Image (cartoon, rainbow, N blue to C red; front, side, top):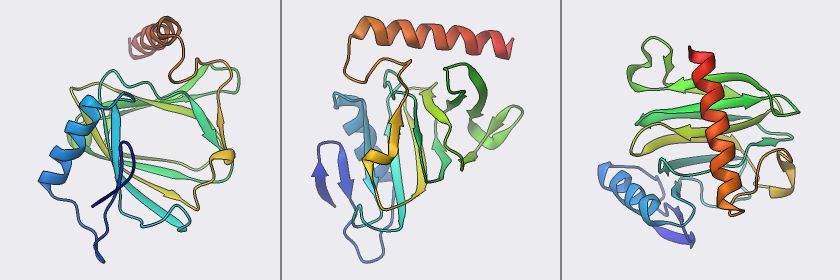
Length: 175
């Protein structure tokens, strides 16, 4: 496995595979990485048409709500639990998908978003591990960050306040 940049690794085998030791590796990386997440890319290049990634997300990771202008994404739960939050253009919560073990009750084990909708994911366990599939090539300029949410790496108080308000709103929805 090769390191592309900090927290992002690329499986270099001709036929990539992920085993338990790979999951342990990216969970350890996510636990210590400043962005509190790490990934192993199964695709070899950002220019490929299909991107598959195994992503570990620590519970205190903040992923700024964002939307993709012209690509779909699918998350498949591997380990842990989390909530995908879908927002309207002005930041109101339109939907939430609870990812959790076995897909029982309100929990799902996978979800797909194929429209340009603002979204984020909130881990609900010590570590969340997902398999993300999305279309490529990677074009960061085709991802729009929500102006109504604080930037990643911004003022920590603003991020904490945003996450607290979001968690409270989700609790009210789940009643």
